[in-house]
Every structure is written in structure tokens, then in C-alpha cells.
Length: 366
Image 1 (cartoon, rainbow, N blue to C red):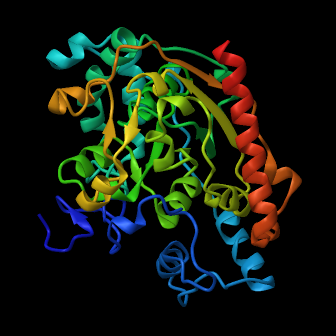
Image 2 (spheres, rainbow, N blue to C red; image 1 turned 90 degrees about the vertical axis):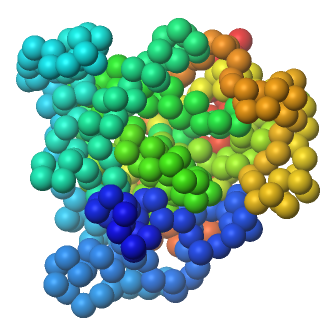
Image 3 (tube, rainbow, N blue to C red; image 1 turned 45 degrees about the vertical axis):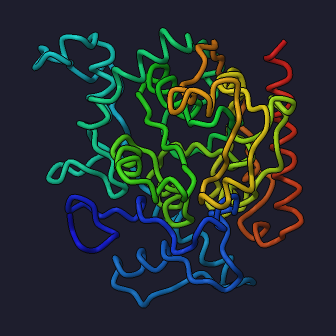
């Protein structure tokens, strides 16, 4: 491994690098920066152009002028549709296990990685993703028995932010959303889940997340995904969502607001996603928060099976999942990038998104 912590197996690994902060960073909003702080996304963009480094100014006309730079230079490669993909003959045992439709979908994603390295700049590997899909597809079809609807609200190309509720201790909700979108879009689309920075500190787990397309939540990574026309999945409840007790099932916790600010700056639509089932897969009786803080963990839950059964107690219950995609919320059509500097407006819009998602959850649970 390269001695620089920002590299992994010779591949740039900004998406894997944990912050310098300790456990205190848990629960913070990784998509917000301090006023006047330099944004590495803009710095890198300017270095690539050979221009003087330019961090986004704190506020005012200069920052408003900086935001359109991403939009004017936005470009992405369109994923080919299924009709353009020839699955060919199965090349190995795994290929023989996968049906033609799934092999087409996986092959369509190969353009996301650089041909020479086999990775994209966030560490995603189509080959690693292909090897992981059978396991998660088994969970999708036989363990969680996922049903879904509203796929027409997912854009066929270009960036969008999928905003979902969170629950269940372990991020199976995000994994099921990734599989569901892959199976129900044409051209096939890969969802890039924004995971908590704490995940970037976990050996092996951080590598697995990156190789299968998930990205540690930093402002730079988030803007990078959107500038490449990708689908970013966010859980604005953060850690509060996965550790809420059973008495708060499907009651959305307060949202972090960074995703709204960046949606306005980049003019990207928001798509609410209601995931029903995640709050039932590991009902939390209570959280031993003091012990969790001492251990540097986001939570130390007590469930009917954990910690009594050890690690096996974290295995999710085989509850049925239902995923519902709601109509897109085009906040960027009502407000401009300059409105992202209004903290009260951004908070109001985040509350509006939260109410919309809560309504979607309540209606589909009936």
C-alpha cells in the first residue's frame, strides 16, 4: 500500500481518507464548511486547469460567481442503454450464474472507471462491484424481498440527489437502494451512497465501500459526484437515524442541511426516497450512549438479539422492504445559487424536504 494515506492500492483514495477529527465528528454535517474555509474541490478544479488556486469566498458576489463554474464546465459520459449492450457469452462461473439482463446492466457501468486503472477517482471498481452483486442481490430478492415503485421519478441521465430515511444500525437500506435502482433503470444507473466519515476509519470496510461505489461524505466528494452527473444518495438524519429507538420508528430525526445548500449551488434536483423496512430490521430498545462514546462508536444499541448473541445479534431480521421514489423536488428552479448563502432559507428548505419525505413514508406504510 502506498505510504500516503490518501492512496489505496495505488489508486487515489480521497473518498476513503478519514478526517483528522476523533469521535466528536460523529453526527456532524460533513457537507457544510466554515465561512471562509477553502474548498478542496474548487482548488483541485483550478489546478487541473492550470489556473491560480481559487477557494470559494465566504459570501457575497464572489461566491455567487464561483458557483456557476461547476455548472458551465459540467460534463459527463452517458451510460449506454440496455439495447446497446451485448452481454456476450458467460466468461466464468459468476457470469453463468448471472442472467443476461444483469450482465448487461453491470457491463453498462464499466465506463465509470478509467480503462487503464480499472477505478474511478473515488475508488469504484466495476470488477469488485460485479463480484459483490450476487450477495446483495440474494438479500434483495430472498431476505428483504424488496418491492419498489416510482422509478419514473429517477432521471435517466445527469445528477440528482436521492434523499432517504435511515435506520437499522447497519446500512442495508442503502445497499438495497443501490440494487433497486440498478435493476429498474435504463440506462442502468449506479447510486453512490454518501456514508458517514466514521466509516472511512474502519479497516477493510472502507475499502469495500469505495470499491463498490460508496463515498465517504465530504464536501469535495459530494460536489465531485454531482459534477460527473451521478446519483448521490444521502441520509440527512445521519447517525441519529440508525440509532433511534423502536418508539421512534419511521419518525424522521432533524435533518442536516448541507445537501440542500449544495443542491442550490449546483442546480441539482432532489428525489425523496421512502425506505420502509429498515427501521424494523434491528429494533433498538435503547442506546448505551456513554459506553459508545468511550469506545469511539456512533452507538451501542441494545436490541432483542444484541449484544446477547454477539456479532450474530447484528444480523438484520428478514423483514420485507418497500422502496418508494417520490416526485423530484426542483428547489433549484425556485431558488438560485445565491440563496444558498441564506442559512435561514436553507434550514427552511431542509425542513420542507423532511416534511415531504415524512408524508411519503406515512402514506406508504398504510
